[in-house]
Amino acid sequence: MKATAKAHTNIALIKYWGKRDEQLFLPTNSSLSVTLDKFYTETSVHFSPDFHADRFILNDQQADPKEMEKITTFLDRIRNLSGKSLYATIDSKNYVPTAAGFASSASGFAALAAAATKAIGLDVDYRQLSQIARQGSGSASRSIYGGYVEWQKGEKADGSDCYALPIISEQDWDIRVLSVEVTTKAKKVLSREGMKRTVETSPFYSGWLEAVEKDLITARDAIKEKDFEKLGHVVEANALKMHATTLGANPPFMYWQSATVEVMQEVEELRAAGIEAYFTIDAGPNVKVLCQPKDEHAVRDKLSLLTVVREIHHCRPGPGITYLPI
Ligand code: 2P0
Image (cartoon, rainbow, N blue to C red; front, side, top):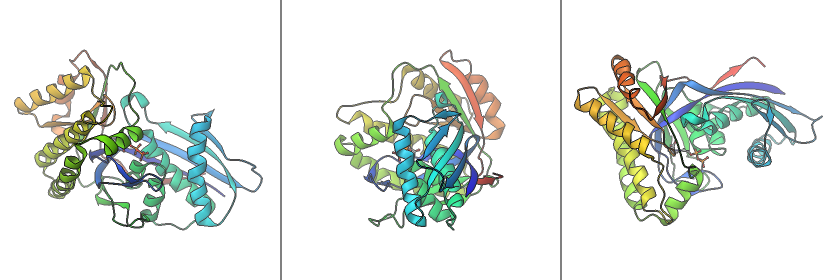
């Protein structure tokens, strides 16, 4: 009862920001992402009647009790679905640099969902896998698929219509995502806590909800039409709206630092100079810059001149989950 799976991280082009059900990880809005080739998690799961507790080894180290609790809760769902009450040993390796501002939870729970269901003998399709991964971390629902992916919020209270679906594959449209790592000072508000505070206290949250579904339709159309300019504009505007909601929260908070704003302004200057580049920002200070393959080097050269830029990682659209030899 062993299996190994690999899943890649994703960057949200239209953001997931807020839950309507925290237990089931049901979002208040649909979101859209592109899976990235460069960063991923590989996870092996072994269920056995010989084990007397779950064990989770992350990057060759025993996980701390808080991480262990999340994993056990997640495995309990899989045990319930399979009707088998077996403990597991999990060995996971993250190839996701945390400093680069990518959530390893997306690739982490997608890989764990794939490996654990296979190891315990559950016959699930990708839609079900997306629903299972979602209950570890919302953004993990999108990392099941490669390329451009939409996570539908659904309407039902039990989450049965809440899962991700592919739009077009990683081979269908080549764009570049430059992950611009900046020098950081303050600690961030974790995204789970940040989105909760925003939903509960920000008067701007209703404006977000009004706008985000329209943004998603525009982004989905742009992807289907392979219209880079249309996609870039809506991606940047959607990120700015998400971050605006945090300024209205109580207590207010912001993920940007001065270095973040410097990169954003440089992207605007690139556009003024005729190079199509657009930014997006997650729950942290780093900036992801979208551009077309022909402009990748010009964008990198310009951004790397900024003293606040520490490193630039070059990503392309990447694949969905794969199963590896045990
Ligand atoms: C996203 N983020 O769509 C958004 C944009 C951050 C900003 O999904 O509580 O780790 O585990 O469901 O998925 C990060 O939040 O949150 C995230 P949980 P998650 O990618």
